[in-house]
Length: 128
Image 1 (cartoon, rainbow, N blue to C red):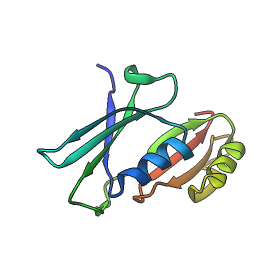
Image 2: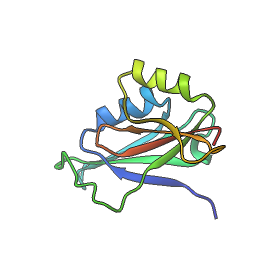
Image 3: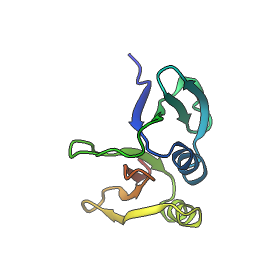
Image 4: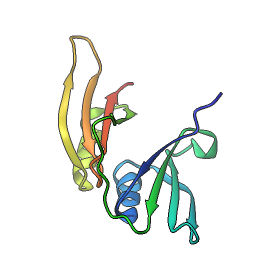
């Protein structure tokens, strides 16, 4: 088995694409506009991972502009080499930092949380 992708529903597709490409540095791998079903799928991956690596699928239902995220969703986790420079880049590009970096326990990895345009949590883990 191989992990393929995680799907999240988004209310503003272009804002979400901008966030994941410009703020987090992902690349659009493919886009499918399904006119009959009135939805669009956009698959993103980090550079070098392409179609073979794990992807994020943004699902935009043309007639829905927001979702109740519920209380069961956790977060997406992304490894970063340098938390300080990663957060500086997020700030510079207008990304929202929901929780500043901290360690859960002594000697543990440095963690921070971002929020995407729809309110989804994204955890950055230094050296993760």
